[in-house]
Amino acid sequence: MIDKYDIFIKNGYVVIGQTIEKLNIGIKNQKIMLLSTNTNYESKNIINAKNLTILPGVIDSQVHFREPGSEHKEDMNTGSMGAALGGVTSIYEMPNTYPPTATIDLLNNKLKLAKNRMWVNYAFFAGATSGNIPSLPELEKVPGCVGIKIFMGSSTGNLLVPDDKTLINVLQSRNHRVAVHAEDEPRLIKRKQLIKNNDVHSHPIWRDEETALNATKRVIKAANISKLPVHILHVTTEEEIELIKKNKEYISVEVTPQHLTLSAPDCYNELKTFAQMNPPIRVKRHLDALWRGINEGVVDVIGSDHAPHTRAEKLKSYPESPSGMPGVQTLLPIMLNHLNNGKISIYKLCELISTNPAKLYKADNKGEIKLNYDADLTIVDLKKEVKITDDIMANKSGWTPFNNKFVKGWPIMTIVNGKIAMRDGKLMGSPNGKPIIFDRK
Image (cartoon, rainbow, N blue to C red; front, side):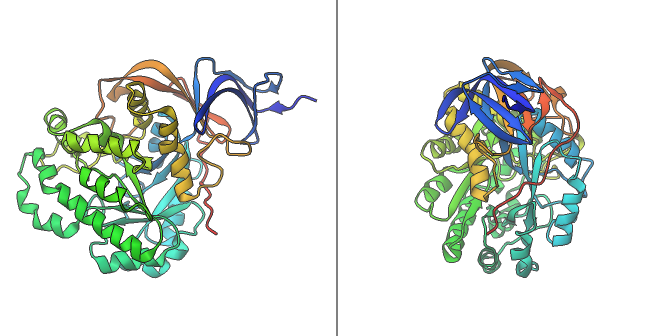
């Protein structure tokens, strides 16, 4: 008897660990149920992936979809549209919404808001504050919670853990990996006088290397006290990479495509306040160091830090202009372009954007192409050349820092829970995303 699959993908080059194999994939009941060189199978839907490469579903580990409270910038539906169009199958969303996601009720409210509106799978971070420390162990157990997020330096929103005592209390109170925005708030306050009105070039001077390094030193010290894992988001400096290299025991590291692609002063000359983000885009020696960090195994994850604001908001004169830029839709195309330029192997890329985001946070059945794993797949054409433009962006604000950039390598199909969410640049069907389940034993 021949098995009948919901989807049968044939003739594709499949990335499995450190190999690429020409395999056919059978999907049934939302799971990967067949990996075979044989083609003698029946299916309701046969996809010919000839000349295409099949990656484990991309997980964007850091997005801000702005709902609730700032839906004029983005919402869960539009943010997840961009994700699916960009080949992303799952997202981890940040808690600095209005109100901040700092209680079980507010976390459950986000999960309700997401239901039947998300084109990709989703999980939410809960925000740590000085007042909610006793509830953190319960918060991180809520189904659909990816973990706890700490803001050490003020950024968008009003979540802040600025002092070491509170930081250590937070890190000792939880049981699973915590994500940290590591900028030193006392130094930010002290250096505010260095902000030059109408001069966004002063942004990386105000939020300088020492601001990031001081915070990262404090995180490492606190992580060593708690003896539990900590994930440092959007690391930007050579000094941090060198420090973390010697202190990896409890530390994992994330970088963004922006910090791997753009550098000062050129990005500020060209994009002005549209290049403004926290931590800032820095001079090229830091970009080079982040790439070294990838090659040396210091960097564990690449996440977009998708943080959209409207054009009108970004056009305000600095420092009234908000920090942040869209990125969920361009994460994969930008990184595939780096792959084609010889900066990264396809195996390392899949590790950083699929396998590790699942493994570090213990997401069940995600991040790899394996039998009985969830059928989340990203199918790409490594040779397709496309010009990224503002016009093709799904984010509500309708812009990208990579406008008019030509890239080689493009997502052709996004499969979420065994259904095609995007094919050839068009969304298919209706939102099919589900809450991601994590191993919380």
